[in-house]
Length: 464
Image (tube, rainbow, N blue to C red):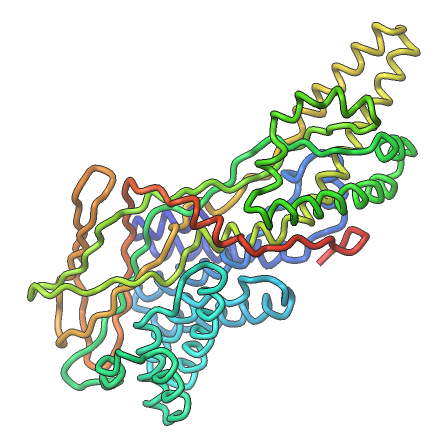
């Protein structure tokens, strides 16, 4: 995925598509995870699992595929990518009805504009209506309200295809105070449209953090029976308690990781005396990636400036989606920690039989060292993605235009210039990647997960 994005940035669009299509084939193949890998992750770490691309990452594979094909002047192939993106998101909506991100509103919008530009108006209005539906959820989940250009375009296309009732609902619900934009014609003979997508900064990334899980000594000892099923059973009981604590802390604005970090080792001795052990685990947590450019201004050669509008906060989506999948990670992690702890105890007993107290101590230290060395959090992700997508929607006379994007970059004021061929009645879709010094406010990510509630999964390991 990172290779495909890098090649796209370098303008090697055919090579980029090759890499992205390989990534999509692998992601599709891995969509159904094997039980064998689940069991292996109990013994070693989640890093032994094949990486599972998230719904957001798979949607962005098609997004960059669309951009690549448009750059290669292959609009029909770009339309295929748009349809594949729609099909993928419908499948996720069916498979994961409880998840927040099952509709990529920004990609649906870009797909709709591409379809409209190529004369597929019926497909375009379907994509645009799905985009509007997605933004209803975006505002509640990520703080991203319906962008005005999306509502305006959906209104134009609905009116153009004769869906007057749909157009009127959009006008009434989303375009109050913007009647002038709503009355713009869908197509004009002497001008065309430009949809400029601004990819800003870098998406939030995962890092490893120590996590201490309280486990009753009886639960730890039950694993000594030696079966994986006993470890899973004990892990399930531990997880139920932990999920309750996670939800209680979430209501108070805290996270379980923040409340159960290294400082709890100060009380580990006292807890052990009353039959509670603190098991060390490695847990992935998200950090804001950002490096956003600020002060973004879009200008055309005639001196006009065009507003930019946020259409997708990828970091907020990535963090919320991870939080909603956290309990399955917790089940594997607690089962793994219990198995390792049981192995440490068994090693100590074997050492005592072979070499007395010193032998037991040496065996315990060796086993503990091995367990800690193999306990690593899975911090893999598509780290090259932008932290957010914004758009500028331009209507220009037919012909070639220079579009300037001015912003404050990492080293001060910077500009990028794009040459765009505007075709009457069509939409020219272009993208530009920028970055700067601004780090994303962590409160944006906290707001995106404020209402997440953790649920205990079924009492068994499942394969999908």
